[in-house]
Length: 369
Image (cartoon, rainbow, N blue to C red; front, side):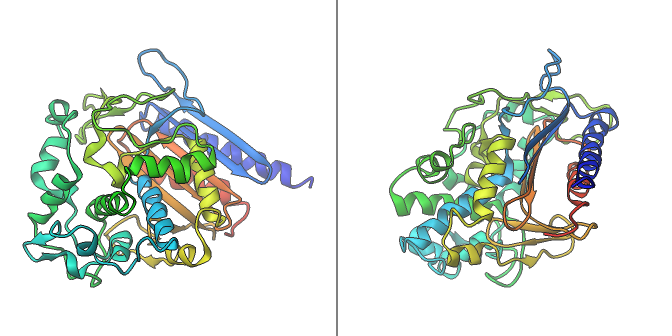
């Protein structure tokens, strides 16, 4: 007992050092980390939530969570599978007839499991040059409020040939998760946002987690401001406040909002098996190494979740996300007992490197999952 206290103080001091350095050396506005373990919660922050006022970052702040949305989407779909409303081996064509078709794409040969596991081969609409020209660089400022229907996003993907035949490879694709959102709505006859609220948000008591509705550009509750250099590489590129934006471009693949506390609570429940029965839990957490150069180095991917191996010997489970002006990362032990959720309110520098440093500092004293 006498040894554990200085070990914990040392690891937490190391976490704080990473946060401070993210602001002082990387020029990021602010960074936060919230740890949840058997001893309780611990929150650390550096920098500001608002560059204009100098307001400090706080634990309850909402921010855009990007692809961490995918874990929520996968959980909802797997819950429907557990209820026999749908099956993971159902094809896209069964649920969304005629939508995935053309240029070698065939929804009749793609399963829902392949959508979740990134093995469908469908082109990632977010990589379409016409869209990227509007969402990256100076043009973003005049297109930040563009609104998209999910079917439009799928249509962009259908204008491209698939990357590979279904089940023959792995590539990160937002298209599959937009399709999953449409399947959830088709299978339930309700909106994705309503299913999210009824199945996850309310049961877990999440207070700052939601999918913004169409045309909702502002964040609902207390929030950090979000800043971007619009992906321009110059160190002195102008920084813009991009807090208000239309997130329909990402929808059920990356459009949600949450807080560090809510993310820890969600992943704690998910990892502990409180959101899915054992069969679907097993499906979600059966992971395979991601191909080199295709995603984050050292990761494996399952159905909406990832695992990452740290140099200290720990294997952690969770998901990360990026959205214009915002990066976040939530990972923890397989039993959900020890979690770290992090958030940056700027979208430049090396976020994965910073996030990994925090995880290494926090989990070095355990060296295990």
